[in-house]
Image (cartoon, rainbow, N blue to C red; front, side, top):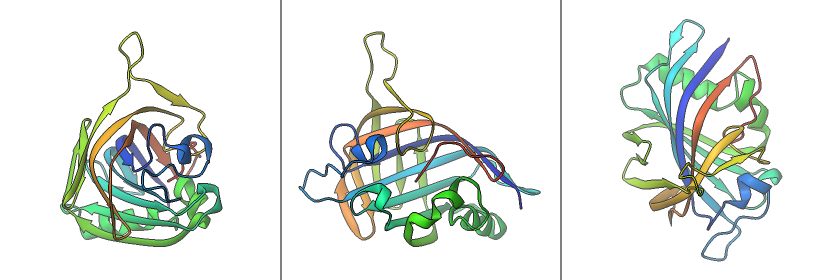
Length: 200
């Protein structure tokens, strides 16, 4: 089964400053001194399909818990599907994000120890997102010319090039509530047929 998702995402995590998990595969830099990284984000799918099933217009939330080095695995992943999705779309998103249909998410599925999916109210804008009752705002860091600061060729990331910035608000992941601190955003394109440098 062939699939493709294209759009824009906004995410945040509990790490301070620039998240060491995604940028360098270094231990999480959590303000509480633990080695945990808690993150959340929403993918705004502007174009998408699973064979003949249209997935355009969906929003997909995700929460992550990395209990140490990202490369060590043991990830806890929660996926939240737009309440307006049909049963067929819901099933398709579950199959894609769980890695059952290969491609980008199939490549990383061996690192996931706990995966769940459910419906949820999702809010999305390029300045912040909400999953259920938790939400955060996002502001990119900017260089001297006023354009967003970007990260390229990161060890772990959702896209080959992404904005980095600051976030404020609340992240709820794996039964844990944490303040949002670091944020990032980018255009994305994932598919079953090709591999884009992206890891959740």
